[in-house]
Each structure stands twice: as structure tokens, then as C-alpha cells.
Length: 443
Ligand code: PMP
Image 1: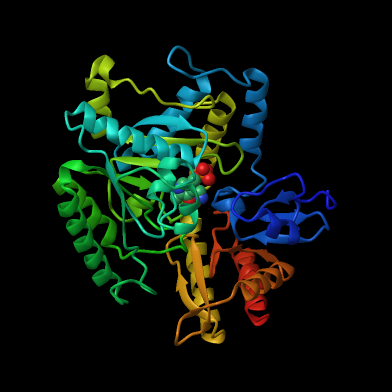
Image 2: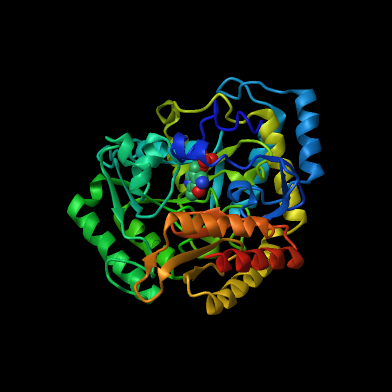
């Protein structure tokens, strides 16, 4: 395995030559919140796989449900003419969990990018069904990440994920991110920055003509962009603007859904009801690739009221895959039984406060972002006063030293990103903090 590492296998998100030169870590097993590599080194997984392993690696209820379903019915298509019992049960469980967010219908997909694609398509079709076919454009935020399909990449707010694949979808416009550390207004006050972005959004909508805009998509807390936590007023401001102009609000909850922010959805955390939500990751805690587009009553009634005109000619072979659906229902029942959102809030607070203490000791910490559940970003700089981004080689040294000291963290561009399993204990959070301390001491 070591000899052929990255020889035949191309890895997502990186240059094959760089990846080959840096021989990716081979993870061979996992238990609880710990992962073990091919050399037998075990660490706390502070990334939760890829923001997804919310229940940890040893949940036997989910594993047993998957195993049983594999024997009962491993696959059958859930297209228009047929379905399967786990799909009906999973849709019930998901709708019930997000009823408070206004969710009434569930459309299953194979992952996060699919779910975003589905919400964008449904948004255009919604307006068409209502007699407003000119509403085709999308608004989103810089630094947002919405997956790799052409639709999601078009609303992505990071050039790296866009430029090599252009031309993307026409009619997508990106507003500033609620990122207080750096922004075009030099505004460090989060509430004032939220007002600035709201004004920029009104301006863009007026410029484009509101009657041409289908939807605005945002993450309640931007994840891959660096864990950017907006002011508590931000999402409500966006909701109000969307309402004023007949624009749908899509909340991309692929990371924030299922308890990560300390509530079941990120939108609920900010007191907002979206028109649609995209989900994945925590929906099965990484045990099976599943995603879902969640649809509010407002959107559902337009499709359902349109008779045959409301046909959704869009779907995936693995939409409502019975094994995936069984994983969804078991994951939700375990998520509720363990009340993971409450632990996420408590352990997130512990981790955030610990990182703030480390920032007093290490001058390379430029910005600490988190404080809402288990989503953390630490921006690393080589000069604190000038906010100079840390070079890639030093970032790699931090990562390696932290790994040797007991925690796998994720390297963003100049950020350390973390989203550990929501089942993590107080002692395991302390292991992450000690490993970060060792990592920062290495540069
Ligand atoms: N949206 C968000 C907010 C995400 O974080 C991600 C994945 N990190 C996606 C969409 C895409 O999900 P997937 O990788 O499952 O396609």
C-alpha cells in the first residue's frame, strides 16, 4: 500500500504531483473519535472525517441497520414508479427532525453537491411554475463552498474551485463574506459588517432587477471557507431581503445540519426558516453516502399544486438507496438519543475557549473563529500586526507536529479547521488542545 500510495489513485483537491510527493497518510481503522494509520499511530480525529462523522466511528446501531438492510434489500430504484420501506421511513424521520425549520418534503440524493444542485434546480422551476420564468439568477457569498457540480461551483465563492472549470453557470453573483478579519469595508464589528453586506445585496438586486433572481444560497456558518461565523443578525437580514424581493433562501446545511452548530440546523441557530435546505454528511454520520434537499411548505405547494406540470425531471440512481435510507433513520435515532447538539455546544465552548487561551501564547494565531458548536477555524499569520498569511511549508509543519502530538486537524489555505465528532468527551477535547499547542510551537 505504501509503495503504490497515490500512484494509481488521484485525490480530490490537490495537484497529483504534490500529493504523490507528500505520500498521503493511510488511515486503516477507527474507533470512537480516534483514527489509526498504517504505522499504528492513533490520534483524535479533530476533523470528523470530513466534517461528517458526527456520531464517531463505533456506532453499532447504525452499522447494524446498514448490515440488516444489505441482506433484506441491498438496492432497488426509488424513481417515480417504485420505492422501498427504508426510504419512506427515512423521509418521515428527516421531516420530523426539521419540521420546526418549516420542512415538509424530502428529496434524497447521493451527497452534498447533489443536494445543492437539486435546490438550485428546484428554485428555478419553482419560479417557472409560478409564472416568473425570468427568475434564473443566483446570489451567494464569497468564501462559500457549495460542492463541485457545475451549479454548486458556480455559486462557490472561492476562485480556486471555479477558474479551471469556466465558463460556469451564467447569472451568479457573489457578495462579500461576513469575514471580520479581512473584508472590503475594513469593518471589524460583525453587526456593522452584516449591515454593509445587506446594503451590497440590495444594491446588486436593484442592479440585476429583482425579477431575474431565483435564489440566494448561504451556509449558516461558512465551513470550508475558513469557519466564518457571521453576526447573529446576518442570516435574518438576508431572509428579510429575500422576502422583500420574492427571492428564495437556500440554506446550505451540508456541514451545519444535524447538530454541528449546537442546534439541529444552522438556520434554526440563527432563528431563520429557509425555503430549502441542502443536507448530507451528518445525515448518515459518514456511514453511507447520502444527501437530501429539504423543501418547505411554501415551495412544495407550488410543485404539488401544478399537477403534471410540477414534474421533477431530476434525480440520481442512488436517490433513496435503501441501505443509505436505513443509515439515515438509524443515524437520526442515535443523534436524538445521544442529544448530540447539547454535547456539541458544551464541547465546542470548551474547545473555543482553549483556542483563545492558545492565542494569548502563540503570536502566529491571527484570528480565532468558532464558539457555536463544534466548528472551529484558526487563521495563522507570520506577522500578527500586518496579518501576513502563513506560508504553506509552515502550515504543513503545524499540521505534522499536531498529528504527532495526537490530533488530526485540517489544513485550509492559511487556516487550521476542526469539526470533531459531536460525541467527543472533555478529555478528548483537551488532547486536541495539547496537540494544537505542540503544532503551533513547531513554527
Ligand atoms: N456544501 C457544503 C456547505 C459543503 O461543506 C460541502 C462539502 N464539504 C458540499 C456542499 C459538497 O458536499 P459533497 O462533498 O458531499 O458533495
